[in-house]
Picture 1 (cartoon, rainbow, N blue to C red):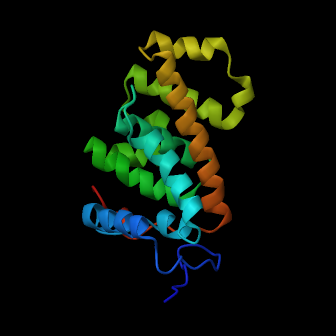
Picture 2: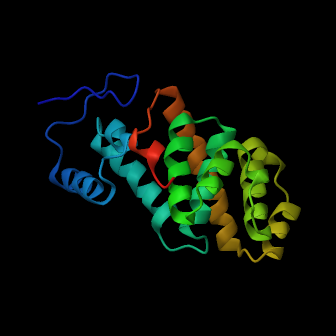
Length: 190
């Protein structure tokens, strides 16, 4: 039975039935999170697009990196805040609250990261992510050098740029499609 996708403003029903591997992935989300993130449900109108999205997301946000999961989530929220992406500010703001154990940090990332209690490494990382988001063509060697001074490797710089670039893209898709965050995110880690 086809179900209308109320997670966005578009009428794109999920594939029904979902392929076994996709259903298993959704079951794991339900088991671990208690729900299926709306972004995954939104993409489920086309399993190939869903697989491409989750492949890139999982690589950037969950795979081994010199950046911690918290740092990657902080980048996601700062970029999403600049782009005013409702879905990602809510969802990734919840992740920052959860990973840091500091609700105020998640709120600061959404509202104004400059007011947060950040160390020099985090501040340099977020300033770089902001520049990549607002004016990537203006990034110069001095910007990369500032990251190296606080301990980032060139591979880390690649990852910072990649996470910032990915969220700039997904923010635009989420905003353009009217994607709505799961209500559960609002109450998490407060």
